[in-house]
Length: 289
Image 1: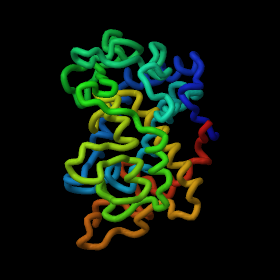
Image 2 (image 1 turned 180 degrees about the vertical axis):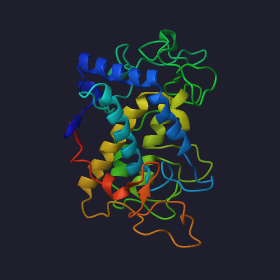
Image 3 (image 1 turned 90 degrees about the vertical axis):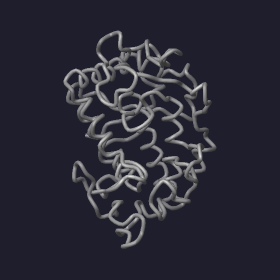
């Protein structure tokens, strides 16, 4: 059955409560931390050896689509009516946005140690204890906008610059790809050492705290962020129907940077052995409001 993912700003109080309840149920059973560990395991960068699938690679979009689907399936085993909402960070751009409410994801971390003290994921309630990628403590941390090194959420103009790209991705198929929708939306700097981030990456840095790095799944806002990233990919496909839905079509040749380091269109994605081709269209699985 096709289900609907909706904008978090349109959720009713009951829908927020059901989503939070299902997420907390996964945490209690340990299944939520399995998702955290999976993301950590497959967060492989340009400078690391081996295959890159989750980040800095063409499979960024299909890999996270499958990851979201697996999480959504787990939620629905607790409550069949729950879906993952999305956060349009070009519109809901301040700490006053509804997703940061006491009845949903809770707010910013406190100034002293960035510990989140409001909402259902505050450590004081005893339901949300960080066990993976632990930093200063076992509590959820956020530091909205990073006041000591200020950063803003991406604007509509910045997102549009990625959506206007006519090619899906481009050689060298990593964080330095000079053009292509994937790298422009994923948001890596155009030069090594540059501290300018874009779109998807900028959002992680704006939330900060646990949203920085491979353990970002520790913050439940991860799912709402990536649902919007997934929606942007869907809209890009609609805007550029003539473009190849995934590149590279073939494995990069010997001597090329991506050789045996990225997935080609006909490959399958670990850890699920899911064909990339199966993740290029979501309309038989879910739709967006």
